[in-house]
Amino acid sequence: MKKIAFIALAISLLGCQKYEGTGGRASVEGTIQVMDYNTSFTQLLSEHPGSEVRVYITYGNNTVYDDDMRAGFDGTFKFDYLRKGKYRIYVYSKDTTFTISGGTEPLFYEFEIKDKKEKVDLGEIVIID
Image (cartoon, rainbow, N blue to C red):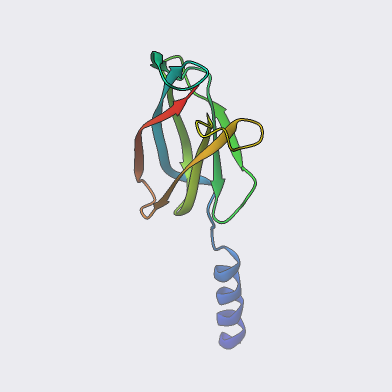
């Protein structure tokens, strides 16, 4: 009987393993800064916070985004309630090399949460517009 109870407990514990994603107490944050250039990217016209810029997050090795949000009026963003694991944040920026179809490219920022209450600060992310 003890053997069956031990096996049942082991199976239940293995089945409760938590993977990357929501449900935790960790977070990641950062700030988007936009550099506005002329059409040939030779002259900086202005620099401002990336208000309303869309920020994406993927959990683990996912290739499609798992969640997204728009940066606040001051360019800040924050994803709360993350579990331990590997993550990737990305935003889109104009292609200054004129080689990418569509004219924009993703900028990726990978990080790992190792503590259940960790707060990751990606700092300033600069995009070109």
